[in-house]
Length: 392
Ligand SMILES: *Cc1c(COP(=O)(O)O)cnc(C)c1O
Image (cartoon, rainbow, N blue to C red; front, side, top):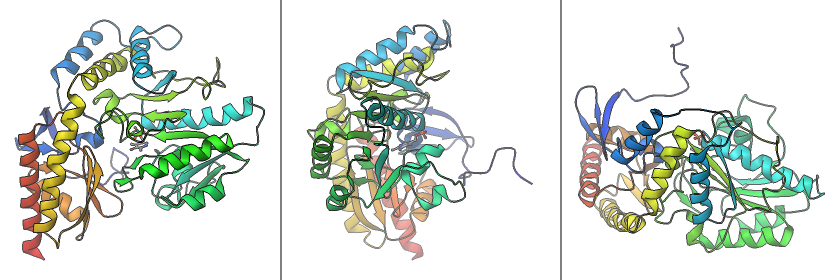
């Protein structure tokens, strides 16, 4: 018999009842170190007092009005994002998928309004993940995600990851945009080299093509910069953001330059809940925290500690781990044993980590994790690796 909850997830038999900072407690009272943070979402940890206050204060005043009226919290958050990034304007959503949908529509509308309606193709890359809507699965093109869901939305071209020659050959007068994650998250923490991002920007400029970045997972401080593109010395035209931006409250955003957004006039796009007062009150508090002096430096410092510790684990457990990947606090361990075994061994060591494609285990802790907690995570990973070795 089908469960009451549609069984599209293979859930671990763990039930959590409360959290505090980097720790999360299950229904048996066990305290887990949370190195997954709800898949890169809870960037300020669980039950962060600032976020609890922002949410409950707003909850006592006004939850929802719709976008038929002005929403001050939404305008405030948009101003903070515009101030801190390449963007001139922001559309708010409830998820990353919706931010990607907005980006795709915006790119096609841009060329349509500029008198080039034939420019509809969007170039994407193997191993990418952009969400689960019919548009987003067509964008990623992964066999696992699209099988049985056809006919797929047309107009996506899938290229190998990091092959600049293939990209050069594919960009033409039908191309509307290149859509890319600066660091593939679900794809296995694959960092796009800086030279690739520079090359893409150059190609886009030469051919009048828009560059869309998907920073849903790698953005909001996770790499040690507010957004990953900021360490590559380039600017996108459009960028999808979500996950960390709400610190655990559902919130996403599509950021754009004035030019890229020029087709999105009144009535062309919308959302009932997108940018509601609750989400944006929390989003403002998250942005303020991430922009505080020293916050991003802390991410970089803890990252160095992790990278050093993970490389030591690699040396001491060569039959379990193969490579360390990533940047900032979006880190991956490529495994020699099945990554699901490592995830299970971490559960036994009372720590949450997240599997990814390419046999990788992801570490995506809250960005305010302390150095002592980072050391504890390394210790628990070591214990998990030893337990696996004992069974090899
Ligand atoms: C998670 C993710 C999405 C989809 O976000 P949802 O909030 O699950 O809709 C899109 N792109 C990337 C890179 C992601 O990691």
